[in-house]
Length: 327
Image 1 (cartoon, one colour):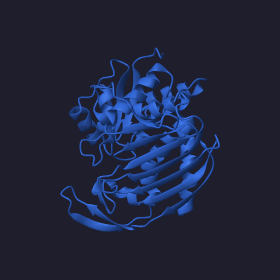
Image 2 (tube, one colour):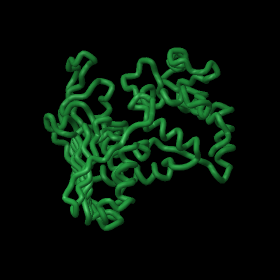
Image 3 (cartoon, helix red, strand yellow):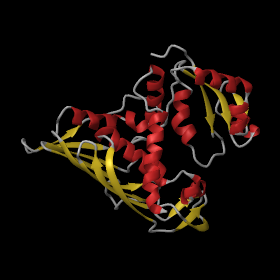
Image 4 (spheres, one colour):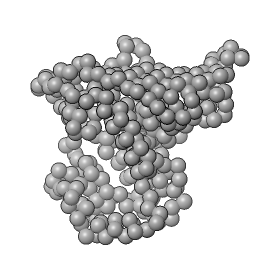
């Protein structure tokens, strides 16, 4: 248990006019009601005026500092001194937003494996459609999803979170190869009213095929593509084949890191020749998008069970290796 409460948090990108709302939808609900475990001390937006407006609009503490540039945030004497002192300590803690590892869906599947419900894992295959709401268009605020040089896109975010969930349950890859493709290079950029503002050429893969071997020796096959699933069909079908049985997870899309209340987990018992639907559920009162993020903050406050910067570095390297095939 961490005793130095409240833990101080600085947020970059919490604007009242933002065209994407991950910070306000996923992070803010927990942080504003963390029962004294966290306090927001700084906010950085594109301008000081924007940051001050957000502080007022979201009802953040009056002591919250407003910044207009992340460099200014790092250069602030109080913040810089605190970071410098922390860096000198031997046990510096860090946390990274791989909140899917704390999803009750992921934890339930992981527990089924660890309990031996399907015996030795022999293989796994995943078919996933998603990452964005449409296969051939994007809202204006997500235009950067077509620009690989920006860094945020369906491979690094959607595929990245999904593959981390898989390897958290089944272990890392010992070897793999990928095939990536840009099958729909022309993407319409839409206004809030769905008017086409422009059509751009994307340099981000919209299809990812990955095949490999896990450290356990199990074979793995992953297919991920951007856009809608087959009509009236799951956007995620994840099967884990074992020596004694098989697990199947179906959901509306691959984003179980966010939280998908319609997710179904089933176990096929080879000996009994029965299929059991495994119960799972939320115990959280937060909005769906904030639940797994809230669990992440709780784990960090408790001092155990959270992913850190070491996990982030490994994840970045893995995705770099995946994207290298698209160059």
